[in-house]
Length: 179
Image 1 (cartoon, rainbow, N blue to C red):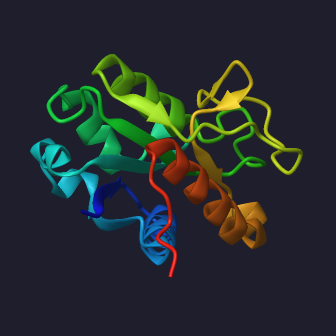
Image 2 (image 1 turned 120 degrees about the horizontal axis):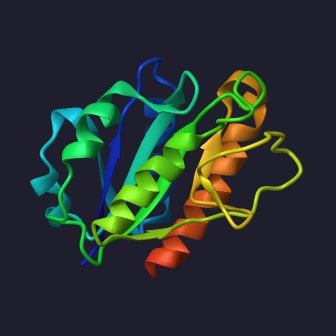
Image 3 (image 1 turned 180 degrees about the vertical axis):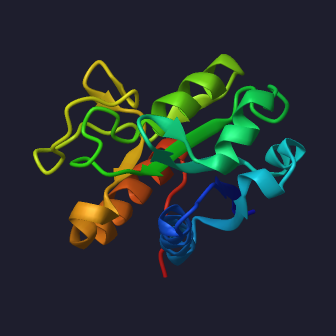
C-alpha cells in the first residue's frame, strides 16, 4: 500500500503554494507516496489523521509573523491527528530584507506542533548559501525544515526542494519505487 502524505500550506503571494506543489511532484515522481495539497485555513485538522505523514508550509511575514492562514489556524490546533505523527516543515522568506527573522514560521509552527505531540523531521544544517542573521526556525545551529528564499535565491529553489524532499522521504522511512 502506498503511503499518503498531506501537504498543508498557507500562502499570500503564491510562493509557498508553488513550493508545496514542487514537493508533491517530486514525492509522487519517486512512487514512494501519493500527496494531497491543501490550504491550511480551508481544511479541518481532523484531516490530519487520514494521512500517514504531514508536511506543513508557511511563509514568514513582516518581522517574524506567521502568514495569515497559519496565523488563524496555529493557535487553535489541538493534538488531534498530530500525536506521534512525523511532520516536515518548509517555508518561504527573505533572508536579506528580513535577515533577523528569516523563516521564523518554521520555528513558530515547529514548536507548537511539537508541544501537541508531533515529531518534526526534515531538519537541515544550513550551508554557506544561506546568509541570514537569525531565525526562530534554527535550533542549535540546525534549521527545523526547508527555508526557501525566492526573492533572492530563486535559482537554488528547485535543487533545494529535490534534496530536501528525498531527505524527508528517508526520514519517513519511505523508499522510491524502482522500475
